[in-house]
Length: 113
Length: 114
Image 1 (cartoon, chains in turn orange, brown):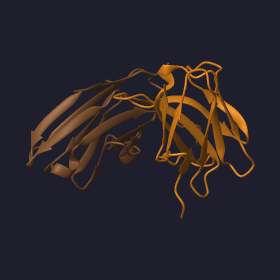
Image 2: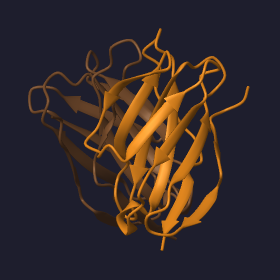
Image 3: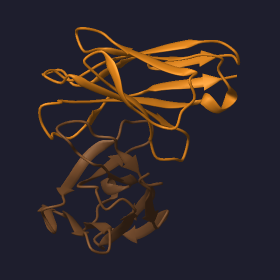
Image 4: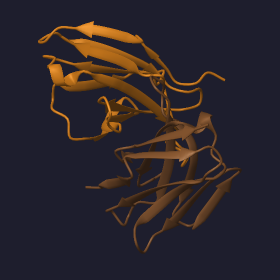
């Protein structure tokens, strides 16, 4: 049973660039949430996707956008990167038909120079 | 919106001692409270969770208690071992059939010395 997977593992970008991060949910899960974890902080909710639509959004600017595909995988896009976007980006999946907990992927470490 | 406060930020104990981490939440509608353990460079791993219809839950050396009236919940680790050393996060959520938005505390760095 495959768990949540994310790619790439690490990424280095420069200010102003754009980045795309990818996530495949745990088998049987259809809901994907994205979190940003800055160094020394707890994860912060970015947004959640279900049925290819954004269902909830945290306090993040429009530079952060996402997409969910018919196979439930998801992408997180960040435009016009800032130094402050450097963080661990975590994807978590769950099932919309249950109250099951969220399971996290290994994360993508983004460094913005 | 929901706000979760977590204390202490760091906790050092001797192997075999107990460790207690406390969290408070602001939104009385929150009904799901998981605890995650995160080792350096790794993903948060769920170690125990509790739902609002339960006051206490135990799993071997780990227990969580919930006081809905006071809006606080605590993690208790007994007989600590060096491998318990990690950062622990509490979180609160309103669960409606999967539409969870986890709000995390700021984390507690637990160091267990042999």
